Image 1 (spheres, rainbow, N blue to C red):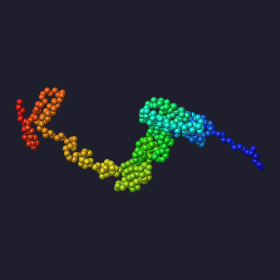
Image 2 (cartoon, helix red, strand yellow):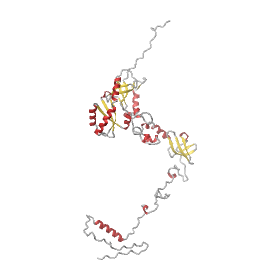
Image 3 (cartoon, rainbow, N blue to C red):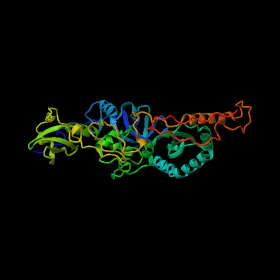
Image 4 (cartoon, rainbow, N blue to C red):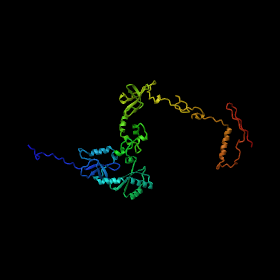
Length: 425
């Protein structure tokens, strides 16, 4: 029996999905993210060039995805997932905005106009840097960005302090015939603008996908790197590399699993002291009581924090490098080796200059005559000043000046020293 096409049932036609109400786009040199209302009626794919109106003006953008009400779309995400991604990626510091609108899909004329503007970057950078030198403003022009149509030119500059560039902006707007916007950036943002590849061979993380550039602590570098050479732990910006915080949580968790240094552990060969540990390989360097050292995996350690053995006095032994078991320190130059009764005091080698401060002062052997003579000489010398008030003759002989020298008294005898003869009137 022949089959007629008229009586064959027709397959139901799937209705076309409605155009997305919002789009997630990426725009600007700093890779800003925005969820904008869409006026586009046709269906576009991810990565398409779009013309958007943001808070800065009309500019080019790249479509990332669309926001769908339900989670059943193939290339869309729900708004809850979008907000969760923003929260996990930095929260309030994440460069996210929803005050914008997607105008249309970029045409060939829009792309050609943007390429023409970008070709003038070198010329604009040269002019702006020369004007900065003329105005003597402490700033460095890093990069320049053109919005679509040339309605605004954004200059990114680097400066350590806040600067007054009002006169510079007026002269630049008069010479370039455009609206000028100066934006101050940090050292990490500078690398995001001008850097390309890192020492690992990949694109710089700050230029590729990182949106929030948080500072990195030196603690992360000490835990993850065996060396603290600035050339090996610093990125293109001169700061610590951003990738140090990727595995910081993993390193911290692995480090907590290792036993503490200078503690006691029990292995299959016996008890031993913990000398050091490797975080990634999870190996522990131990030293047994007989002096042998070995690298033991974590799974071969039977017990941790084993009680320390007791010595002959009944006290717990300490690590061989600490406490009472420590090797005596070498004496410094000019010092005798310490003895158990010294209690940390440095005994002098020889000579009166190293006398301890607790020693009594040395008795003076000067005669009374000399003491009187010295004091009298000092008083006369002090009285010869301008404001001393001494009106006597300057060449007056001092008391006992022309007398013969007296012999020094003998300390072994009890004979008193000879008295000076009386002075004639």
